[in-house]
Length: 178
Ligand SMILES: [Zn+2]
Ligand SMILES: [Zn+2]
Image 1 (tube, rainbow, N blue to C red):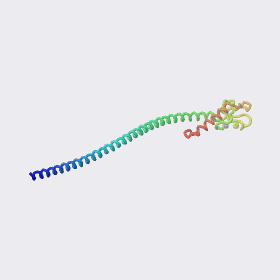
Image 2 (cartoon, rainbow, N blue to C red; image 1 turned 60 degrees about the vertical axis):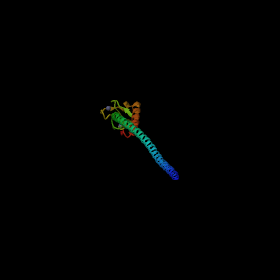
Image 3 (cartoon, protein in one colour; image 1 turned 90 degrees about the vertical axis):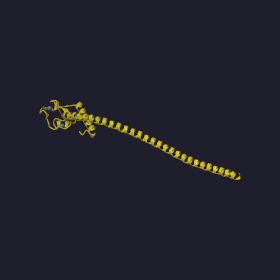
Image 4 (cartoon, helix red, strand yellow; image 1 turned 180 degrees about the horizontal axis):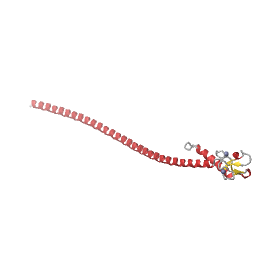
């Protein structure tokens, strides 16, 4: 009987030891499991942040791309306008050259200064009309005009001054070398 009791006590003790060992093992496993879960949660958070960053970068790139396309569009329109302007300038230049011929002195062929009208209808610089004594010869149509018939033209004078000024303004633009 005594032997049985001691056996029972030993068995109880062994049972307790086993229970404690099992408990320790369970705790160890739970700690490892918790740590793994925490690690995975961290990974997920990091991935989520990475995804947000990548998404933001993508949106930024899309906006940049859009801006580049708009810029290209603008450049194309500007190029078209430039071509149109070049055509206009070319026409303007032709018109100016034609005007210049009309305003050229019949005698010295330069742009007239202080133009005077001759009886033939052509005009010459005042200084050219004073070069020869007596009548003034028009070198364009070879007609002579009596000095008393030479008329100073205020209107022609003004037009010539304005033409010279316009030509000066346009020559300041590189695109219009007059
Ligand atoms: Zn002249
Ligand atoms: Zn003439």
